[in-house]
Length: 283
Image 1 (tube, helix red, strand yellow):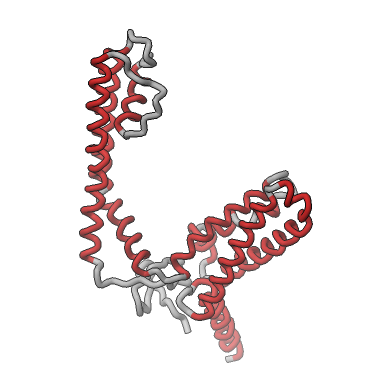
Image 2 (cartoon, helix red, strand yellow; image 1 turned 45 degrees about the horizontal axis):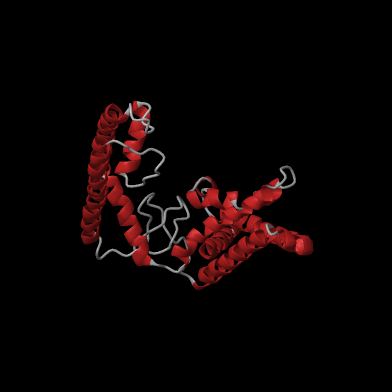
């Protein structure tokens, strides 16, 4: 009985810690995450100020000590996140877990690698958690639909990209035949294909340009064609997004993270994880 009581207390403590660190919907979770954002932004500002020689020369010690304090806080937070989940490796190798690690180690690396402390600017990536903290469910849902739409339309887009590549090879070869003797930069077929890609995508670096009348006529046709080609993948994805939006019009998502597999974007009032089936709130 005593061992069971200790285990329950341990699980309860870990559950509360998990709620604070991973649940942006709870009052404590919101306070923690907002404080975390303030610290992240402060750290980024300190790194930016440190890169200014005049400021660094006068306030170097203050900036260095402040950065070390923030690094220690992030280290404690990173360890706490590992402790709060049932499967630590899931968090360590998750997207946010890797970002958290990358934003913590640069200051320690400064002991061994000169100048590596400036890499703490990677902490700006942690600002991506803003979508969870503010509970922008509508934006979270739309981003999920967008990802799914890309997945559903990847076959069509792949075929389209292959078609565009073949078209660029053909157009590049034609331009090479037309401009090869004009001293206009079309010195080889690969270089001409590069020009076709740049022109068709409407980038237009201008490092290669046709000089003959026929070459300029063909390039004008390719430029106009580029606008139509750019609209095709946009239309494909937009159609899939519209379909996904109709299917998920009544679906809501929250910021709750599964303590077992770290999956997010659960439906409101969900009791079990949609990915691993584990209970979301072990109380």
